[in-house]
Image (tube, helix red, strand yellow):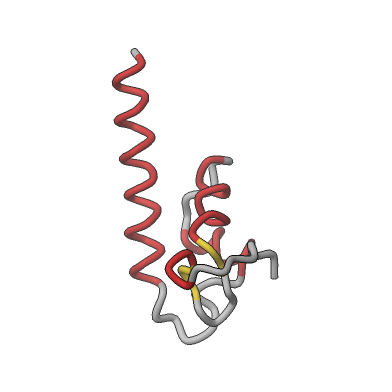
Amino acid sequence: MPTNKTKNPDDIICGCTGTTKEKVKQLIQSGITDVNDIASKTGATTGCGSCDIDIVAFVENVKDQKNKSNTHTN
């Protein structure tokens, strides 16, 4: 499963697969925002499932930040 290596445990959003927030952010920026699609690409949420809510919240947060930055540039 593709993940980014990190030394900071706070960067990991899925402990089962080692998926990092940065990897999920890259997927979001490439247009992948569905949790099932993120799971397919990273394996996140397919282990114990406890990261589901964290990934949903993270996706919403990144999308909100992107929308705010687009609003300020227009």
